[in-house]
Image 1 (cartoon, one colour):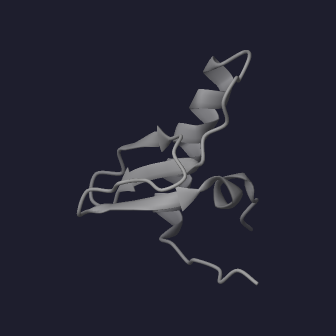
Image 2 (cartoon, one colour):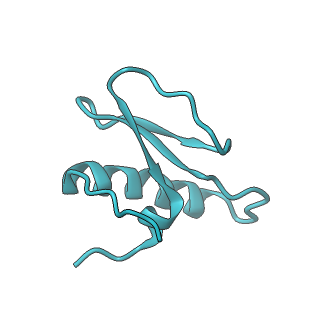
Image 3 (cartoon, one colour):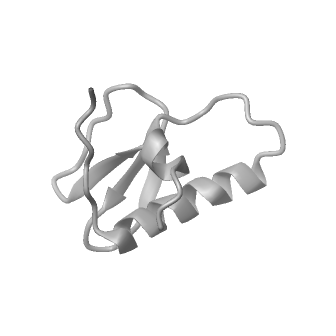
Length: 72
């Protein structure tokens, strides 16, 4: 059983926007990312394609499962 991770909703929305842009721009997605590494202060992030990402001090990792889940 996985423990859910609770994030700041605005941080999650920013990561979802990064992932959505990637999916929109890539007509044929060869590789699926594992998630997004995003900075907690600037909301800038990048897609991560490795299982064990290396993060900078103010970054957090949001897994793909959480990005694809619909939040209500």
